[in-house]
Length: 373
Image (cartoon, rainbow, N blue to C red):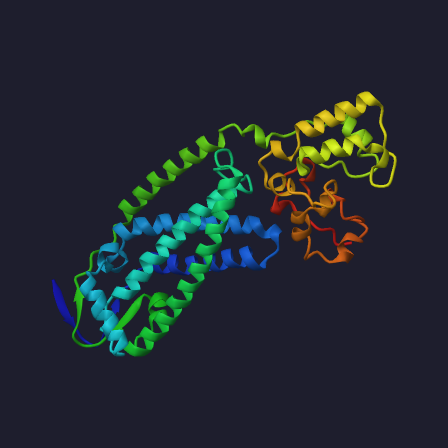
């Protein structure tokens, strides 16, 4: 059933849809800022922005079934002919009016939804595989997380391009149709010219939407609980404190977690203690053998953390020094030299001065706290 509309205001976007739109904008901006601009220890905010995006997308998918007329997915699924007609109208600078999403706008909605879902999936894989955090930490390996990280980056680049295109489309459509689309998504009302067909709107069904959201929330909670109870693999083990290692090696310098060097480096280091970085660090034979065995057994190859995977690639001309590894140099390239000279740091290898979880060997981004003096 359709009726001709006069030059009048029509309620188009309901409050939940408008709230979703602006929260989505906020989370996307927050995710981009914390992913590209903010320091690494803001990674926790980035992760929570991702979780917020998951919740928002879940709500929007449900509201796309039970929401007000123009929030429902079926209201903006157009046949190809309508889409081509709208594109033709744009090229001729005379696009036809639509009450809700126009055909090209609908295509952008579906494309953005797909990219955002891709970002959520790859983000969870990166979080679990590379960072060893979140619900997938016990089931996703580092190699999968590293591959997902590349996909996550390129999906973000695609999202930025699509956002730019979306903004340009909104501006162009607003100018050509003399209808302020931004005002519409703020107030919920659109002004339609005479003759624009308006379908009889279907009301929202919030009770059914809430019921389905509750079911999805319970299912997600049960899944997350089950994943959280999975035992961590041996490659994520927590090493017991080695008293001898702390006493003999920690007496002169910070006692590095053995996962920060490959087995070959540890074996060579322990066989040349008489010339240990310019000093004689010799130990008795039994202690040397015990420490060498422990270090090699817990070297980088036996762990699947990001630091272990990255630092097992050593500098060819200095394979025993962690701070000479290509990854270490790249990660600390932006740290000013005066930071290492601060009283609370003093040297480039005083890891626990800035990394609160250094002893565990994890070096999570969120655990970074650089001393101010």
